[in-house]
Length: 217
Ligand code: AMP
Image 1 (cartoon, rainbow, N blue to C red):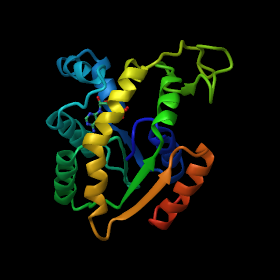
Image 2: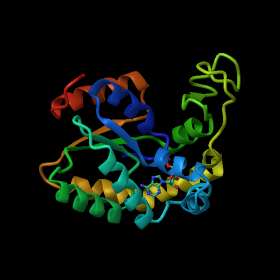
Image 3: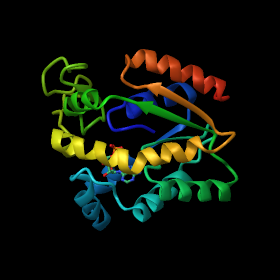
């Protein structure tokens, strides 16, 4: 968990390479549905392009389906879900039914100015999914993917005004979920400063995952 731009997606991709869980990013799953042009996808676009949260009932059912279809041996790494207290409650109910309670919660923090700088510079390749940053991780040739040569794009919700709205939404609706888990005894938890160098953050998270009992592939 953490505000947009704290590095959740970047770290999650590296952690699943090492520990072999299935990475389920609610943002990626919803973006794929939106891009499909389905009726649901068109409904999602109204919320996502404005940087608003998609209603709980929709996200909960989309994520429940993804979790059921992807229940791998090494478990799931949820990224971007749950983002509201009702979503966390629905997740608890689903995990209880499956007899697989939550193992651990990772909280990544970051300062607002750092978040805005990180997100507004973010570019990605729609063809292969590689992510770049105009300042911190530029492609070899501006606007072009190093891996497949495809044109890089900016997410419509990564414009500065939308990012500020997404941050406000995080503070209002998602920060209470961090407290929800903080109050639960026996749940493993780690909080890292996502504003630090990505390799340092990864080292810290890797150590924590090992202490949580995850084994490397
Ligand atoms: P992300 O890639 O995690 O920043 O998510 C992009 C957008 O997808 C968000 O701004 C929301 O519109 C939507 N979204 C992703 N996850 C959730 C969630 N758990 N609850 C509601 N909306 C979500």
